[in-house]
Length: 151
Image (tube, rainbow, N blue to C red):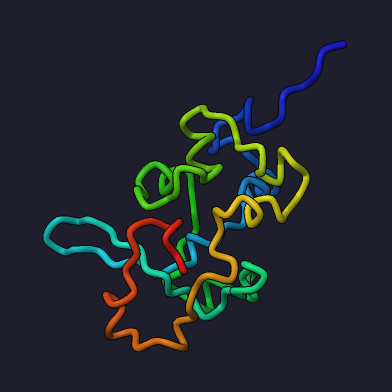
């Protein structure tokens, strides 16, 4: 009896249904962090400041379905954006699928556990500051080296 491969091993990102696409997100919350771009070099710097709509204890957007109207700067990931956004973490399932790499063992689609990303220490859960608690004019004070450096 042959076993069917999971969709993320057989489909391109552009071929996935909305449900498949959404299920690829591991819930790390890194997309919800503010980033700064050096206008001269184009280099992107990650901060530990999260969008006001990210629940830092659960690492979920409290306005997910309305996020784009509530926060116009919210990035909607698409296959072409996954190719271009260099700040997506190496563990991002969208990036991994694009590169033909396997999902990590802790990914919810592999483990069946939505807490796997947090238990593996690759999420921002409990490690970020909300934008409502910082002076957004001094965002450069909150730059971190890597998402793993969030504290």
